[in-house]
Image (cartoon, rainbow, N blue to C red):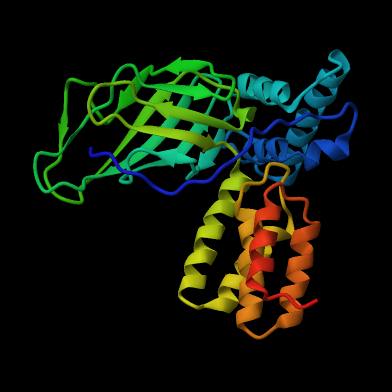
Length: 302
């Protein structure tokens, strides 16, 4: 594999705290509700209404029990307990990363169970000849608290120095790496291959399905904007900023930026000003640079 680069996003550390005895806050926590959705969809649960209701009661029972036992109960504790007791997992589809080494290498899924952290990857060969791939035994995942977890095993790809040799340009290799289980509430992790040649890495992998979904939506909206499909782009951008999460990346400020531009380019001066005012009131940490840019462009009337 040859080294490359891809665009990424910045994400702050995600920390989730559940207040004591608050059922409303329990179901407002995206980490917990995401886990509950996986919890109810497992095949070993009865999928009729009574089965699902019983599962919800079990889920809530453990929350309140832990809340009574500990003064500072967090979603992390609840999540890890449920992962262990029920054998269920959290799944993150197509997670984004801040930066990565190889443009042709993609993480398609991360699954965290009580036994493993399972990383599914997809590599597309970009070389005409002499292309190969392997994974070093010293590959690790590192959580935001700087704890490293060493690779346990790999599937469908050899461990170096053994090689998988590609037969043709564009050939796709899908493989899976297994690591010890981690706390899924860490928010982001790094995946790093420690080797001497063509080593790969992913830094700042986001373990938040809502945030990943918004990032993918942003990319789609941006592509539509470049194609001048403004109405379709506006619809997606406006959906992104409708409910901004507690751990926003730069995409939310830039979504406002393009909503302002779309309104302006469409002759909707009132709409542009309304989006500009919403940006100023959003509380986004990086909004000031966007506000300054818009003001310098002189497209908002006083």
